[in-house]
Image (cartoon, rainbow, N blue to C red; front, side):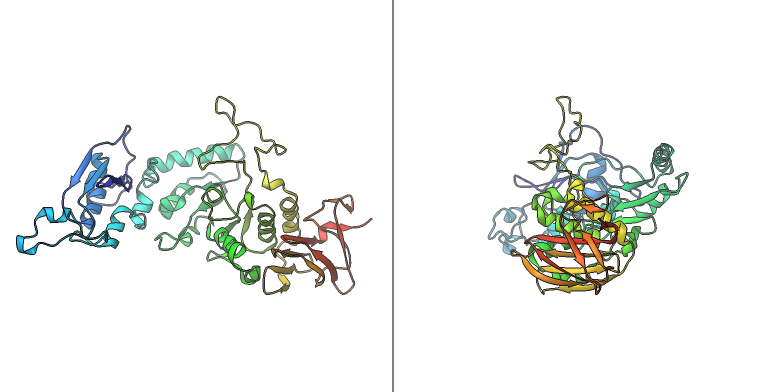
Length: 422
């Protein structure tokens, strides 16, 4: 991790642990204790500071690097460009003899450097040398111990911060088959992409959740007609949110209420990826842990308590899992939209869903389906029980049509596993 960058009184970057000279082995973990020694790289340019942080200061244990002022300053060529001209700013544009704004930004945040992403420390966390056989053996042994207890698979956290080959080398040490999915978050300009990890297993790509939130928040549900991901559908983990994004605000979350349910309903009805439903506890700040006792031990989850959100148990989400299982790999059919925020589509002759994210209701509309004739339980609002339904039902006629009134931010979902026989 980079030594911290000190610009006047500003502390603007973190520490970087770097490789030893002569090759690119993964960085070692930071030594224990506080790093408080400052290296003043007086008058060094930004590119040089960045390299020195990586090659020398980090491994030596420096805690910060002090650089000369980055602002535009007077240019005293007639006096030989003295060092002190740099301390006479003429603007706060980041452009002077040590480099321009882009070079300064690259020095402070080299997060967009492939080597640093995969071989340096993440958020002050110690970095295991996953390129070393000993480390791979130890991690493999740990995973095999879990497999021996009946575990069926693993989620690899922050996988993009390890080379795909390192992940593969660890997985090669497993004693038996295991389902693998890897967290490979990807943003604009990042050098590591999810597709690099597909040879190891499935991947979680947060672009799915971010794109879904953008469409629900500021675009039109009609745009969901061709919704997909850059990652092949059969290998992507689909989710509306996760424990990170619900705190950062980049996706929808339980705080969005009915619209969050609609987004999950779409995810569970749409044939892209393996859905993953988030289940949370309530929190008021970013760092807050789960409900705990005075010793810090997590309390039993209680879905009747406001302390737990339990989104997985919300009726519309819980019942759409059954919809997802029932429709299987049936194709999308009978797409309809109003050009705005109301959509409807079928999954072959097994299921049909209507989602309305408009501020007003959609009243008295007939919808064309491929469902067999019969009476169906609306699983967004009722549970199919003993051939009946605890909520509203809809009659599909011999031609596959049914009539429904859809409330604002609401929907209807019917499937062949929830037919009413009474």
